[in-house]
Length: 79
Image 1 (cartoon, rainbow, N blue to C red):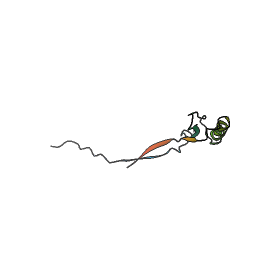
Image 2 (image 1 turned 90 degrees about the vertical axis):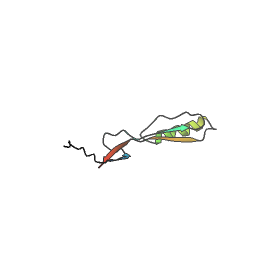
Image 3 (image 1 turned 120 degrees about the vertical axis):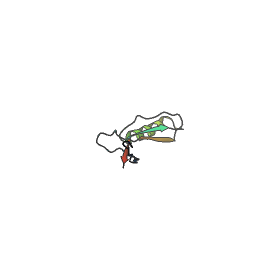
Image 4 (image 1 turned 45 degrees about the vertical axis):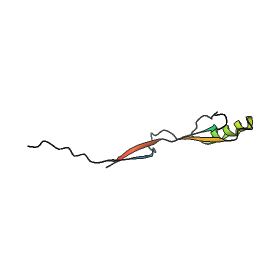
């Protein structure tokens, strides 16, 4: 006599940008590659870019920057 059998359906996970209404905002910041100082994060790229220009004005030898983007992602399962 055999007992109940469990059937497991294989599922595939995917990673996608989170565009749901309750998702966190994507944010931007700039970081000086020379000294490591960075701007505040902002929903707009304008404020971090302005910070970088002002930072270069105060520090003429600092002219290399990194953009730091924080983008929300989520996983979904397909089956």
